[in-house]
Length: 327
Image 1 (cartoon, helix red, strand yellow):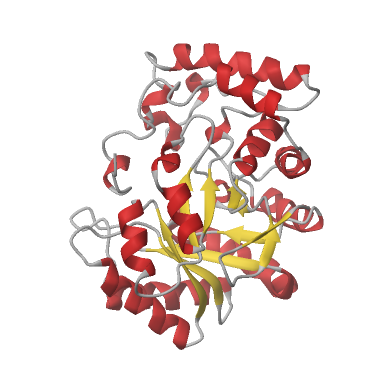
Image 2: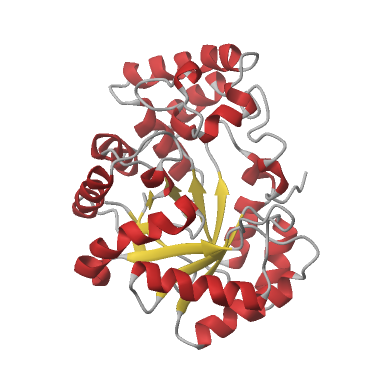
């Protein structure tokens, strides 16, 4: 697989990584054995960068990784996150005490003594990012983490954080229907030597081979609360998505492969982070790392899906509270 560097001084990893939120039912029921088989098969595809969080399934995603990591720890670049709480009165906590407790719990659940890349999952409003970076640098000096990552931050936050210490990765939603990082985060990562880890590059399934049907979303499916899938916006989005699927098929590719290839073509420091528990889907995602789109193809995609084409915001009111706004 195509390799990309995880930060200025970081390791080389597959250009396509694997997110584990799906492993614990974020988009519907999940089977543990299917998830473990997907992990094994992904490693053989060259997907060696695994991303999880202490909030996925309230820690269950990290626990699920433990037996896999026991067998393959030396082949895996492991990322996890902290900072989202289960407290409705304080949904985000970046204090040293909380983050220390969260880190120790993640290490126990995954049965490892070191996390290669550790993110602040959401920034706590009002707490200086400089203070948060000092906490993360102490974790690094203790040998419990390798590199520092920040998730869903504004370019200005990255600038302030990088003045304190190296930031290896910024994780942001980035895809053909969520292009906000082009307004500063993509450029800021290049300036500061950070990888842009683009989560949901397949648009939460909208660029999959089979388009989702919001009528089938269960009560635990995150997409049920996202405005782009509601009764007003989804029919309008569906028109564009069908055109894109036709384009991909005309070129003999799956929509997911083309969507991943598009994301990777945006800049050499972009790493695509799809989440799936299906090896068939991950093979299509991995194919995107080998697919070189011509300028004519990129122009054609841009005509069908121009910047800002998606109807509806990406998050509803509750989920929009964490990501930093910057435009």
